[in-house]
Image (cartoon, rainbow, N blue to C red; front, top):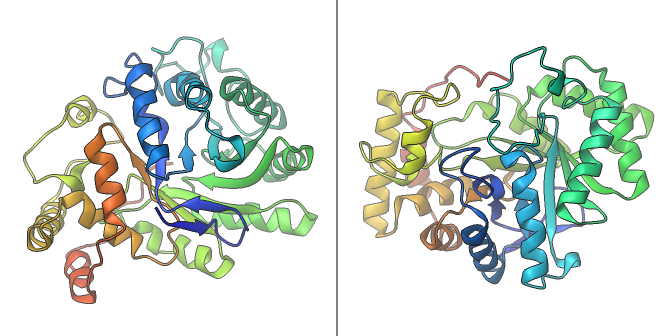
Length: 338
């Protein structure tokens, strides 16, 4: 395993980040791995040298965080060798079967449950620490931009959490470049802690972060932590094949239909994979790892082959011609709604 600094910070993280959205309860999403299997996969990732784990309070309504806590205890993983990232913003419910967007607006369960007010952030962090059974969070992301809360309120609350020792570093996820830059500018103006990482969607089928966000990240030395580097597995299999997750997500509003351009890109991934005699996932991950601003792509590991592909991808080096071949068909597409 390779280790790199998280942006301009001195903290080192593994080149692969373990995505823990895959661990929790099948009541939340049918493709999620339950505790017993999840613990085994976390142990395998740790043994492979992965020290960076990404979760969120909303994943299986907190069950993902609880499973991570159990893994740390069960496998006697030293706390100081782990980098735990979690998130706040989304509402969390007591019932693991309550999914994202299934509670109607106006439901009393949504009152002060989620968002980025001072109250919501503090409550979310306290709850995450309790579920994780930790004294501090290494990297706290705001999961989305909150248009209903003043940016100053959010940034001051986040700064206070860092000063309290409950959070070590701050990051943001899934927002427009102007929102991210504005929030960091407010923090800088007031002498508050700034964001050091951006977790965003970036892969061969969705490169819209190249419009503005990536240039800002490079200029500021902010780490890019891409989620969905394999576009929900689509960049790891030939067109026409399916998986449990693909079937479960088929009718979800956040899953878009593949276009002819997408199919062309996937076909080129397949061709290069065959030429190099490696799985498609390794080629797709090798492409994202070739980008200088990328610190650690978040990889969901649901079986040992996923882990093997992630680790082996570090050894796959693409030529300039191969990178050009993979990127050439892409055309700009509408931004993901946020």
